Length: 115
Length: 117
Image (cartoon, rainbow over all chains, first blue to last red):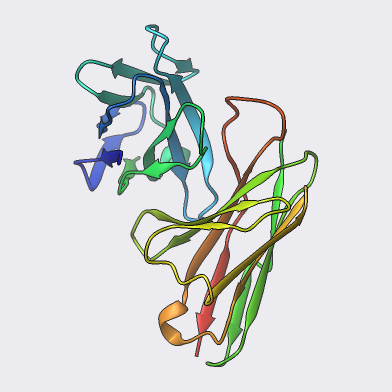
């Protein structure tokens, strides 16, 4: 079974600075998808960014980018120019390619943005 | 964009009551929907995969007779917590994926906060 590990229960960053959230995963599969979801206090799950394992290029969405290291099974999220609205829980998630589309989530990292 | 509506957003009821939560895909058809449970300050735990027209697939440790799932149409899945007790109090979230389009991310509802007195 696949597992996802987020080793940082909490992180903080100053407004306008950059922060990196860590995520590692364990799988024997070669094709899969990785996601970062944001959950603000409203508890709505918001997709931040996704990465297909077969793509070598790291995904980027505006201020959010990932560092995908397939061999190391690492998938970190970098938030640039942090904003107060970025404060939330961030969950890393894994999904197999094909078969069940269920997501396996990490335990989450609580991000605080200081003004 | 894809919208998933979950209703109700908040339920408070007495122990022993059965509670039904609805998950609807508003602008797309979803053959598969997922039900998650989230305890305070914890991650989402998958409870079951809801498949349109067939029985749900439950994760290990989830009581299928306790958490009844019905997915009668391509836009609606329901989760019924039967004879709810205080330990069933939690945040329940559904998600759905578009039918017929591979590699689509899951779209989440806004969740239901269930409190059993």
